[in-house]
Length: 196
Image (cartoon, rainbow, N blue to C red; front, top):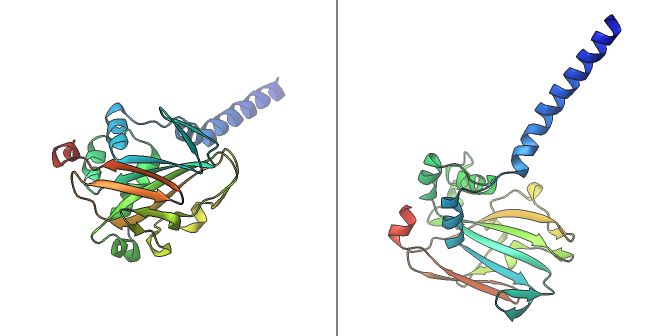
């Protein structure tokens, strides 16, 4: 009888350990953006299809990868304080504005954070310095994410996130983005939309 009790205790402890061990993973997998954050991010994001054939109506074939470039201005930090129902990459991107590292704070003087979310469809050598924003080409010094935390050689199905610093944007400005032969644009939300 005592051995059965020990067995059940061991099973219970193992289940508790598994619940605590996998809970952070489960939360990360099911992270999502609230409706308000989805709208904010959509207004600040442009999608580039690398080596893709555009057929119209949003149909793209044979793309090597998808690159979503999202502008995260400093003002979104105030909104995040009130509504943090957002994916972790947004939180991480906004945290660069308040970094403890002086070199990061220096990189962000008069500049904004842009988060590059990439997804490989075929093998892809992703390089952030191939990105141009309004004629400004990203340099290795502009990359905020430590190299240890992102991969450049992506296999099909791989995803990655890299944050970079680039010159600040103005309300109503049209932003043109280029990555090799791919190009896209978005219009910076006006001052009223930025406050939302």
